[in-house]
Length: 255
Image 1: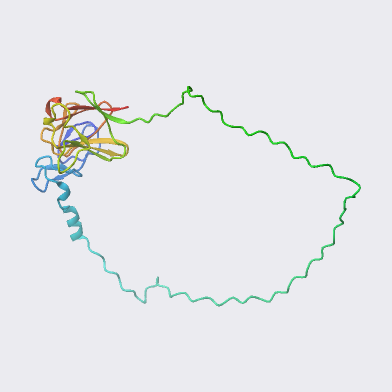
Image 2: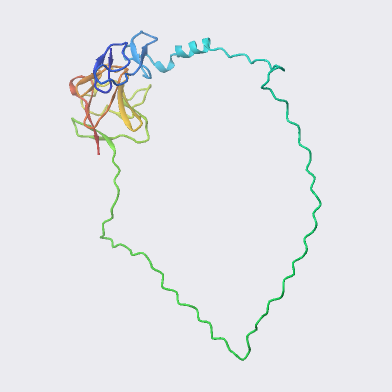
């Protein structure tokens, strides 16, 4: 069964569009290890935890076997669209040109000033004093632009976690040797219900999506379970619960 990421409607496995809102449904495939239905692009199988990045892509193998490189057709001398190589043009011969006759320019009369008439002394114009910008006093407040950030607020402790704008995938979980978490929840109360590799938040086109990557106790969005392999587009005010019972809950908000 495929859950619509837009309206959370449950659709049959063969559906390509949501029966409720007509949105395009994410495509699914089978896990090469256990055969469970998973979403295309998922990192781990939600049923057996198999690492899907190490599995070979069956579609690429089929395309490589069925694709044949067409042989180049031999050039035929009878082909009317084959033209002979162009021949270099004949060199240009420059004609002999007669040199132009020099133009005769009559001299212009020059009136020299009389030495008896003295010229007035030269006075340089006074330039205005340069204007300097006024210096604001120390007590004058300045207007500063504040950039809004996306945050996760831990409901149980009111702790605020700013999501990094430079990451396109944010791992949520606890320290481990396989996928180190970007958001470590091991210091929060009841962290034992959270798996070491629990959920990922992806950033695509300015939108935030969350998906469960094979946790033991599941991920819940507004108290609705998020199936492994499916992802949900986060909206301001959504509540993200890692594990059952809403013991570790985060509020998705804009600061």
